[in-house]
Every structure is written in C-alpha cells, then in structure tokens.
Length: 105
Image (cartoon, rainbow, N blue to C red; front, side, top):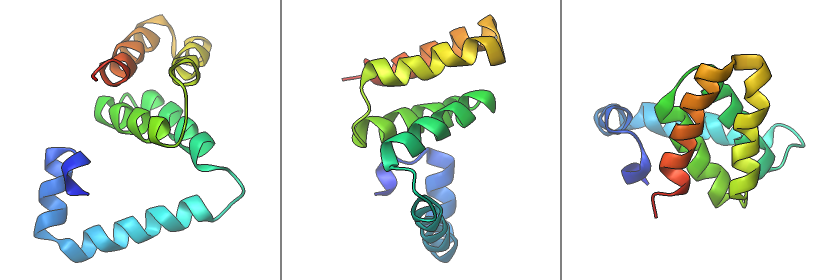
C-alpha cells in the first residue's frame, strides 16, 4: 500500500501511522459520501490536481483513474477540457504529466 505513495507522504505515514490511518479513513468516507462512482471521482480529482499544478497529484490520480477503469482517452480528455480554463502552458504541462503515467508501462 505505501509503495504507491510519494516518498515524502510515505515517510510521514510511516512516522505517524495513526495520522495515515485516519487520513485513509477520511479519504474513503469522502468517496462514499455521495453518488459519484470511483472512476468519475478520480477524473474529477485529476482535474483538481491539474488546476493545483500538482505533478505528483496528477500522476497519482491518473494511476487511480486507470485502476478504476478510465481509458487513456478519458484521462487525456480531462487535459483537453482544461485548455480553456487553465490555458495552453499549464495544459501542455499536465498533458506531459498524464503521459508520464499513461505510457510508463
């Protein structure tokens, strides 16, 4: 479980396991709080990670969206949708972050 987390986050969770446990429980509760399916939720969170300019968050949400059944085309569509909101420079950056993961295998 911890191996798929970014190194800094993993270190904090290893040093403070109770915080990690509670964070995971909160995360699960947020997903279960409403009617949105996991795939859609991860695509939404992908968009939020992109808007926050979080490369690590974008990588993580691409992986989670793929695990939840999202296609490469659906994931890349999130980047295309960001164009008119975030602009070309950031859309280009997030496109490369997405493709870091999509084509890592």
